[in-house]
Amino acid sequence: MKYLLSLLIAASLCFAADSKLGKPLTLTTQTAIADINAKPADFLGKTVQVKGKISEVCQAMGCWMQLVDPATKAAVKIKVKDGEIVFPKDSVGKMAVAEGKLAKIEMTKDQAIAQAKHEAEENKKKFDPASVKGPVTIYQIQGTGAVIE
Image (cartoon, rainbow, N blue to C red; front, side, top):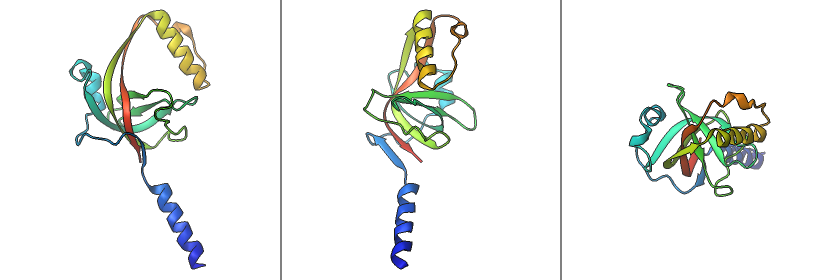
């Protein structure tokens, strides 16, 4: 019985531990997602660390996750090269800290429609091409490491 209890405690500690993905985090301070969204040019090409609740994860390959700051509702996407890091598909609702360089991506209307359609298909959501109104500029973090709490 003691053995079984010890085994259960050990297993629960493993599941309670943070999940570290990719390279170790290097920064000691975090940048508010709202600050990045308000003045992205100030952070462009710089390594930033953000914290938020995971609101979405790529359901095809786990190659991106969306973080939302619970206080401000500001959001940012963390994108990694396919297979470099795989964000757990069941991590929606968990808190995460992620690090990487902020990148600017400019898309024509056609490119934006194709990207939005692709993401909708990956997440098994309906997509209306009319929802994309024109050329799109997005900012996302090219992730290098993350910790999911």
